[in-house]
Image 1 (cartoon, rainbow, N blue to C red):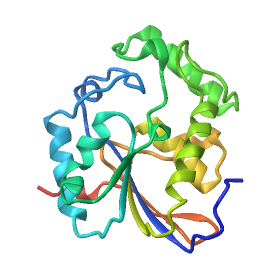
Image 2 (cartoon, one colour; image 1 turned 180 degrees about the horizontal axis):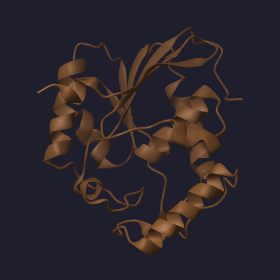
Image 3 (spheres, rainbow, N blue to C red; image 1 turned 180 degrees about the vertical axis):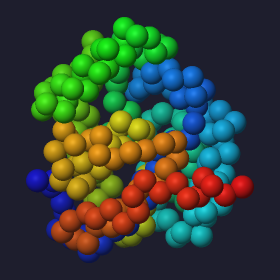
Image 4 (tube, rainbow, N blue to C red; image 1 turned 30 degrees about the vertical axis):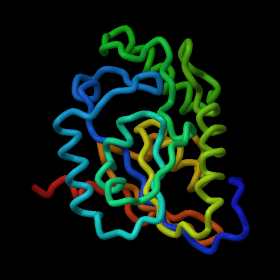
Length: 213
C-alpha cells in the first residue's frame, strides 16, 4: 500500500510526459542520464498543451531534474506558478544503452528485460541503469513531497515515459508488472484525482490538446 498523509482532503494531479526531443524522434534510447532539449515538434506540443490548459488554476508545478520537463511546461512557469524539481520524477536509467541508436542486438536485450519485468523480476536492470523497484523507491519519496502540501489542490507534474508508467502503477496500486497498461506519447496527459483515500484516473492518455493547430 502507498503511504498517504491523513490531512489531505483531495488533490487533482495533471501528469504529463515531456515533449518530443530529437532522440525521441530518432528512436535513440533516452533515460535519466540524457539531459536533452525539446526539438521544434516538442516546443509545438508544449505550446499546444499550454493553450489548452492555461486557465487551470495550478497551485504548484513539479518536474524532474532533466531540462526537457521544464521546457515542456515553461509557459506555465512564466505565469508565475511556483515549481520544484524532484529527482524522484526522473526517467528510469537505462545505463549503458542510453544515447545508443536502436539495433537488432539491443532490441533483443530490451525485449528480454521487458519480459523479465512482466514476469515479476522487478530488480532486473541494465548495467549502470535502474530497476523498476529502484525507480519506485525514489518515486515514493517524490510522492511524499507532492502530497505533503494539502494547500496545493491542483498540481501539474511533468515527467518521463517509463517513469510515468511506473508512477501510475504506484498511484493506482497496480503491480509494477502492469506498467505497460498505461500507453503514452510525448506530452500526453493523465489526470488523476485523489479523494483522501485513493487515486482515480479521470483522463486516460488524453492527447486531444495535440490535435489543435
